[in-house]
Image (cartoon, rainbow, N blue to C red; front, side):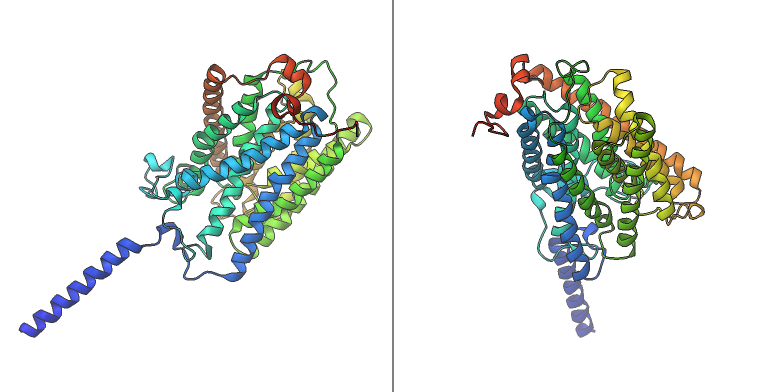
Length: 449
């Protein structure tokens, strides 16, 4: 009897010790989705992360830089480069934690953590070479999601290019990343218990999180900063469309990492995402060019590049659920719609969205996010598990509306605060001189040598 009691006591002690060890050295819950790290998945995700980073530097830097006037080329490139560095630091300190911590989240229960994560992963606490997310090292997933966090505020640069102060741009990017991007990323992508995730919103690679979010912020920013001096009466053509074509080409290539990488595996989902991404980009380029040809009797280099980017944006939320036919339809529709929003709407309404961030990213993102619903249904050739194509369309509409309101209100508040403190805009003399010299005392081209 006494021996049996002793054995029971030892078993109890061992059980308590095991529980204590589990509590002290546990891997975060969201990183335990698989039994092992897969080398093939890891190799693909390392590649995808590099592809998405390439979309910002040099992709977006060249794409935007070629479209501004020569005196502002370096300022745009500097803004893209600086945001990449700034967001990286903020992502490590608190960004990843606020976006992807699952602390306090419960499926079907709306609470504070449905909107924003906790700080339990601040400074990447708990991250080791062996912690994982699904079948890849968590460090790779941290890096992959970091590249999304970098490019989103970079996209907004195109709306206020050629007139915002560099210091104001840095503060705006940091605050916008913290108050707008991180909550939306958490509400869509952090898993069960997230606000829009539990609602059933489909966003495979960032239609709402990246493109609508940034596009709406861009519209608010260009309204807050005001029009460029002389616009729209002064002709302000792109100074180097060669840069823009190279940038668009790098964006197209990098987008395979953006969309196919969002499968977080080297599998059939990634393969289909890559295929539909190519189809949508090509279809939108053709759609834009066809309408431009019909309207202006010629096809432009800037038009076909802009059309391709619009198609890439539109297919982003749908890349994991639509089929080839759906991508073709989505691309053509988006190319036609964005031609008019980028070339007609801003002049009619009088807002100076310098490089058409709203006209391309917001509008294509909205079209793509809405059509993700019906195109996910099997009846339209999709692969999403949706009960009703039109019911999912309504869910998508609610997600789009929420993102628009969230981004617009918080972006406006941030810009108002900065305008009253730092001041948003360079003065008239600096704008006339160009931001390369006024802000950085450098020239992109020294033609005297």
